[in-house]
Image 1 (cartoon, rainbow, N blue to C red):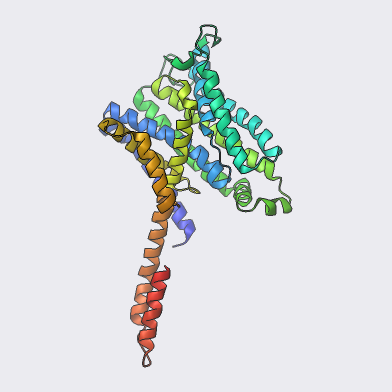
Image 2: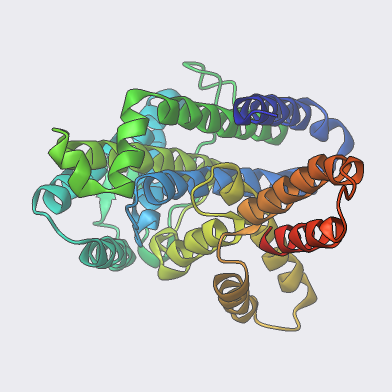
Length: 362
């Protein structure tokens, strides 16, 4: 089966599952379970933001939580000042994108290497954490929105019907909006990767010097990918602020940035569906361990990271795809080996050894 057909089947399956989740799960699940799934979906959007710039752009950003937190705080401040969510949502996407544009322009046009790029993004995230954490006084406010310092910003207005502040969305509708946003981000990134821009970004990841010799301004393409990732992370932050009607400086924390990387490593770097799978699995594992209250969940996450780096370096989705491909090849080759019989003395034995060698190689 051609890979393009596999891609079409995968896209169709993702779309069908998304629609089923939007309309079937709210009917069969309790509100608490639906709220738990909502945060899983939101974090999957955040995972996709880093999956794009790291897995396809080759840009390892240790501080993706910075854009996530900026989006959350921007929505909280804007919605408290506007009294309506439509403009706040737009700002929650635009402000992190602009911040990514400013930060990325400095890093990429200064020709900073990948290692220092990761250090800079992590440092920026920690600076924002400490900056917001120190705004606990009443004098720290933007308009009518107090920043709250380490106490965070409570009672954030949730999403409402566009331009209708008197019609807020209920938890079921917010879940449906989050699933729709995840589908939009996923299909949007697939379309972007299939475009000329996406092909160039992937080519730069494979060999940046060759792309430069072909006449491409690699800095501009990497900056574009970085801005897209920042905007998607900002959207996730906006939805997260809606989910709990609360935001605190922990959204900028080191633990948040580390979790995103773990989701991608577990699910599979270089894929889009892998980080979603990894996010759901790790989030469920964390919640389950927290409910047991037997072992520190961070210790388990560290062990999971080590195991996957050493034993499943490709991640779950690429590894399972490789296994399925090998099984399909074996199934296709089995009838051919069964039909072909020995025509000369000893030829059957040689053919059998060749077949065994082929199996070992596969």
